[in-house]
Structures are given as C-alpha cells and as structure tokens.
Length: 552
Image (cartoon, rainbow, N blue to C red):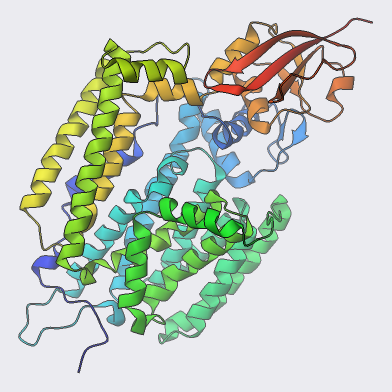
C-alpha cells in the first residue's frame, strides 16, 4: 500500500545549508541599493516625501499632507520611516535613514519565512516517509533543510526584487503577513510567542494600510485553527479573534479603511495571468507541484497555513485589478509551498532548474557587464549609442568600489556554478541555490555598475533640477494637476512650497506647473504666462509646463 506522504528524504538529503554562505547571500540581496541613490519615481518618492515632511515638521504626524492635500497613506510605516529620519537628521542622509528600517523589515521577513517553514515541516503530516531499514532524515534536520529552501525560494522570486527594496508601506504589510503566518505555524510549538505574534501581526497589517486583508487573513486563520487536530491550536482561535478586533479598531482610529476594489471583468484575465507568471516566478510552478504531490494533505497545517496568505493576496490582486503590491503579500506563503516541493522533485526537474538558472543569469550578468563597458569606454559602440538614446544627457561615472564589488559578486557566481555542479547533489535546497544567487547577483550588478544610470533615469532629481532653472528658490508653486510623486519631489529636492489643492491656481502662488502629454500642448491658463518647458531625461512624451502669474 502506497503511503499518502510523497516525501522520501535520506540523511544526506536533509543536510542544512551552511550558515555563513546563506548569510552572505542574504547580505548580497539586502544591502545593494541601500546607499548611494535617491528615492525613485512614483510610490518610492511619494512615501519618502511624506516621511521626510513628517520628520521635518512640515506636516502633522497624525494627518500628513502633500502639497496641502491630505495623503491617502498608511500611518504606521510612514511613522517608522519618519522616526528614523528624525533620529539621524544631523548625521545620516534622509534617504538612507528612511531605508534602514525597511531593509530590516525585509530581513525580518526572510527570517520569519524560515521559522514558519521550520515549524510546519516538524508536523507529522509534513515529515518524510520512514525507511524500512532506517537511514531516513531526522525530523529536525529535515525541517531545517526545507526552511533553507523556503528562504532561497523567497529571494529567487522576481516580484520581491524591486518592491522589496523600496521605502513603501507595502513592505510593512509584507512583514506583518509573514509574522501572522509564523504565528499560525508556531501555535503548537511556541504557545506564548505565537500569541504575541498574532496580536501584533494583524493590527500592524491593518495599520500599514491593509485592514481588509488583515480581516480576511484572520478569517482564514480561524477556519484552519478551528478544524485543527491540535487542542492548543483550536484554543488559538480566541487569540486570532482578539487580534482581528484590535486590527479593526486600529484601522478606524488611523482612518485606514479604504475600498480600493475596481471591479473585475473577463478582459482582465490575460493581464492577470501574465502578471502572475512573471511576478511569482519561479515559486508558482513549485507551489503548484506541491499542491499536486501533497494533495492528500491539503487540510494539514503545512499546506493550509501558507495557503491563507496566498489566497488572500490573490483575491486582493484580482479585486484591485492587478495590483502587484497586493500580490506581494502572498510571496512568503508561496515560498513556503514551494519549499515543500523540494522533497518530491525528480532529478530531471532539478537539473532543468539548474541549467535554466545558470544560463539565464549568466547571460543577464554578461549583458550588464557589456553595457557597463560601453558606458565607460564607448565600446561596443551600439550599446553605448542605445544608452545615449534612451538616457540623453547622462554622463557615465566611474567608481572603483562599485567595480570591485561587482567583480567579487561575479567571481562568487562563477565559483557557485562550479560548486553546485560538483557537490551537494542530494541536499533538498540544491535546486534553489542558483535561482536565488542569480537574482542576488543581477541585483548587485545593477546597484553597482548601473546605479548612476538607473538613478539618472528613475530619480526625480534631474527633472527638479530642470524646473529649478526657471523657478526661483523659495517660490510657491501651484500644482493642482500634479501627481503626489511630483509634489513630493518638488518639496524635497526643490525645497519649494507646493499647493496641490484644486483651488491652487486661484491662490497666492506666483508659479504654476502643469504636466501634460497632449500634442499640441494646451495654451496657458488665463492670467498665466508660459515661461518654459521641462522634460524628464528618459521620458519624451511627458512635458512639464512652467507658468508665471501675470501681474494685474
């Protein structure tokens, strides 16, 4: 009779990943991009602009505004960033000070994913089949090996790469969801720690701007715990209910309730499918394989607990018509599910993952190096011409430190490829070493070799500098049509006072900005004179018109 458990793991297969290489890999993933760059356009600069305005006293802590307009913001993450900016105001760059707590949140998310998987892998249903004559993996060793695989899977996920390195409220939501998943996983093993974790996780998730997802995750946790075979887990439902109540009260106190659903139409299906394919790569094939191979254990904790976060995130993504920031919250759960596919993978599938990762990330690294050489020397000529075309006005900068770090990372990748093909062929986590390391390598190369180019293209500073050639310092700018990101950039980089309210053109400001993509450009508003136009360096369609009020 066949066992319902699909996992067959030997003692050698359950060897843990050495701690020092794992920590170095995590550092290579977390640290690049932390220093030496501006906040980038859209959500990154918007969140940072609110944080620095709070820290500098230009807006209240309890009701922050941008350009005099109330900000639709999640208060807890912005308070966190503002507190770090205020603490380091005299000796740390504000952008770096704001990134530090969010880098810690990402590191905490990785750690929570490891411990979540570890506790779930210790359950009886998740353990591998014992051998008739011994030699099977010990429970603790098996749980550690699977947990190592979950961390590698999370770092290998493409959707986490950029969003995980931003200074936005969604990183606080991600960490809160990881903490909640940990609380559910640790309930049978760490009674009081799991209770404290759930009482913190759901209110933090609600206070970070996702109260609806907090309540949905709480309902899922109630269902899983109420049907559990463990008495202490069934008793955990009371603590989840208390945490849900606290989350609802905190969301009301902070004014965090926002209905962001835009409806769903059949035409959205192809868009969502494409987004899921790349955003959840490479964990979604492994997660689906887990659900198939472990289909007889779907009601057990090692599958039902991570499925809560995955289902809530996918549902929010659909309701919000493809919001990648909602989908972000499902990544820890997807990584846990992907880790449980590792004990069941066939050798051919593992080899395919290795070869694809080796070829794909090697080609990506070579491309980054070639374009870097073109930016520095002009050779090859075609990549250099493409850079000049896509980023007109950019002047390449040389950094010896960046070059050394990039060389070290590249040599480490070459050594890792050789090491992976020659050793540790039986370890559970072997199939995810190259994907995670490849993502970390490409991020390291981008944040060292390409950082000046990316900062030039993605930072709003060059655009503000062009506006500053026409608008004097300490001016008041009316920007009723400006996006919050533009308002934040003007207030922080330009140090202007911006009035973004609908009545701004009729107010006291003598300068006005209007961003448009219309061709031909619309005429100046009545009572205003066109002074000039400013273009973003890498955007030829968007034109910023600068007007000055005509004296009566």
